[in-house]
View 1 (cartoon, rainbow, N blue to C red):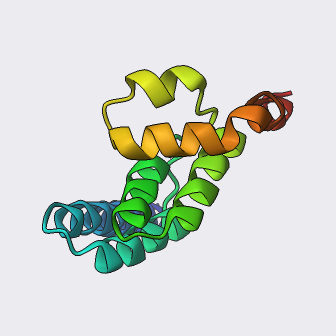
View 2 (view 1 turned 30 degrees about the horizontal axis):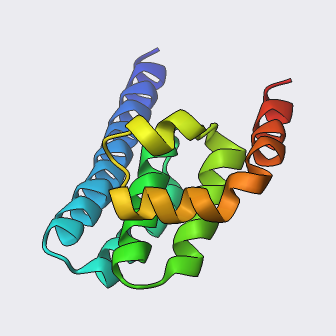
Length: 129
């Protein structure tokens, strides 16, 4: 019985440390972004998305798209927004009201995807069924 309890404690501690590691990636990404080091921010955001177990990543993808846009990589910014629409349900209202999206990126990306927005959102809805 002691071995079982000890094993459970080890697993719990390992998961806790893993979660903190993931959180530190996101914190690092945001700090790099605040310091206008968008290349490093992009790297950290991509690593966070790869390893996190968080399900709701819409705002993380918006933050990543902001970094691409501010790094003058508009194509990657739009591709990231498309991923946020298809996978996390980004809506037209998000383009307008979400406080995380850069206003210039919002205008640019919405103009680029507007004709396909409904089709992209249907892909997201299909994942919910």
